[in-house]
Structure formats: structure tokens, C-alpha cells
Length: 333
Image (cartoon, rainbow, N blue to C red; front, side, top):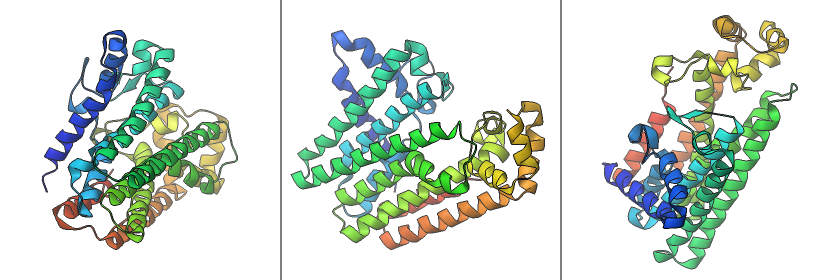
């Protein structure tokens, strides 16, 4: 299935939703939104917009269940707006000055306006989901809104845990999963569940799609953690040194701390310098953190694919969904 028409329609729908703010008194506010979404300003274009994986997955799930993807476009826009609201706030909370090689919104317009812009994107997502009323019965729209709002709550839970973990030194591998469930898996799970709901799938099939998205998100995050330490910088587009230097308590780090060996001893001494990253990464590998993390990624991948097989996506959209899942799950360092 050619997904280009879907991606083009997603972009048009996003622009329509953000266009609610295109009025004389809020013109600069609107410009802030279009800048962050990658449509305007220096460096605007495909690299700045991102891949729109989440809304695409929602539409593919809907079509694979027999829906007309055009009817589901407001939900696709809603999940992408939620994703971008979380990015704006993440950049502020992480004091990030760059995103996708561009100055972050808050750095460009200031923190107060950055917070407000994130809030604006969140509200736009809530308005977008109600536009489903043009094509779906009221109970379906209410259910879709419930799923989206619960997901937003999960996102804030995950972010709370992520921030609170920064100052804790008693974390275990078991603490990792609830955090990434909120930060990464929740929205992918939401996309798949919403797609099945809007495709009018039965409850069991909706649950299979939801579980597929959940484990897909977990596998994706574990792989990202592995790449963040041992990845090829030329392929990932970011420095593999950054995760260790920034002190991120990723899954490999937690596996290493659990061993209470050389890596744990070095970690407790203080921040890791750029010039010792290679040595510290080797310590982690020697203490089985690399192997253990890959085993966890394989387990989450298999669970994702098992649930996808159970969902049994149909037609060309189903094939495209399986292809996209395999692409996301098959990343290499």
C-alpha cells in the first residue's frame, strides 16, 4: 500500500487543526505552532516535521480493520498533536536547546510562551478528537476521547517518573518498565487501539492492537537505549556518548548497576566524561548489560509481533502495518 496519500492527508489535517489559531491577535502564537510542527522557519521541511509514525499507524490500523481512513483523520491529528505537546514540554524540562537540528520553541520565544504553546497543542488535540463526530456515532467519539485522555495521563506519569529517577540511586530494572510504559509505549498503544476502535473491530481485536502498540513501544525504547550507548553515530544521527555523559538511567545502565561491579563503582563516582565513554561502555558490555538489553528487546519484539498476528490486520493496509512494525523493530546499531 502506498502510504504517501495518507501522510499527505495527515499533514493537511494537522494544518487545519493548528489553523484554529491563525487570527490577527494570535498570529505570532500561530507562527510558534507552525515552527514547532516543522512547516515554517529556518530548516523547515521533512527533516523538521518528523516521520509522523504515530498518526500513520493509527490510520493503517483503522484501514486494516475495514475503515475508511479519511474518516479517522481527526484522531490521527489528535495523537500527533499530543506527541508534539509532549515534545515541547520535554524540551523545557530537559533544558534542550535543539530538536531535529533546529532551535527549540522555548529557546526561540522564551520559556513562558513555550509552556503556553505546549498547552495550546494539548488543547488542539482535544478539539481534534471531537471532530470524529462528523463521521462516527457519539459513543464511539466518547470512547476515543477517553482513550486519548487516559493516554495523556499516562504520559505525565511517565514523565514524572523519568524526572524523579534523575536524583535516585536505588533504581532497579523493575523501575524502568513503568517509566517507559508512560513515556514511550502509551502513545503508540493509543494509536493502535484508536485505529481498531475506529475500524469498528470487536473488543478482543481492539485489545490485540492495543497490546501490539504497547510492546512495540517498549521494544523501540529498549533499542533506543542500546543505540544511545553502543550505536553507530553515522546511522543514529546522534552521539552514542551522550546517554552516558548525560547520566541517563537507561536499561543498560540499570542492568550494569544491578551487577554492582566496575561499572557501578565508576557510576557512583560522578558524571562520566566524554573521553572515558568508550571504556565505560566496554565495562557495561563485559558485565552483560549489552546482552541483557538485547534479550529484553527480543522479548518485547516477540510479544509485539504475537499480538499483531492475533489482531490479524487485513488487506494492503495490514501488509503496510506489518512492514512498518518490522522496520521499527528491526533497527540496527
